[in-house]
Length: 217
Image (cartoon, helix red, strand yellow):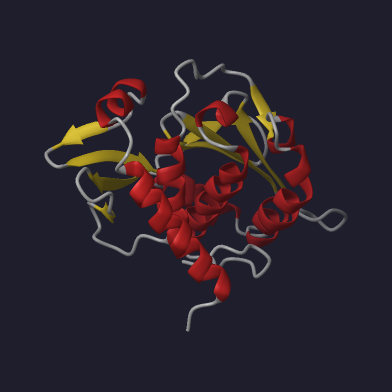
């Protein structure tokens, strides 16, 4: 049975699907270089998973595994397509979520629903975390006990950093974004982008999602 929250996400997806059909797709393809034209679809990758957006209907499907596409994945893709800022560029400066433009009001939610569950889920599971990030083509980083840079989208890389706990201190985690992230997608969507990433890592690692992370796969 669907919850009211799930129904509201589906309603947003449907509204954004219709909005996609009003966009100038040629301009979209020109401005978002990671987008590809493949027949009747615009294709892109979200955390190493290939998706296609039907140009005539706006429907989104998974192209390589044929699996279920969650509302969160759809919303992230539509949100990226809706953000047509021409001057957005990766800056190479990495900051935590709350330092991105417009994200400070969502800091507590991000900590409670992303950062703390991330640390809790992988306490004592360092090898599983590393194996999962490698499987998602993550780039190994020299910081933390397990640090990997994953591509949420080509224009929105995310760094997942994890420090293993010990007898005195629990495990710690953090996520870093290029300072330009909020130029490519709205700030609220970045929470959802992080949630999908955490869910993909958990699924790849074979680790259950923590109950306080509100992403459903």
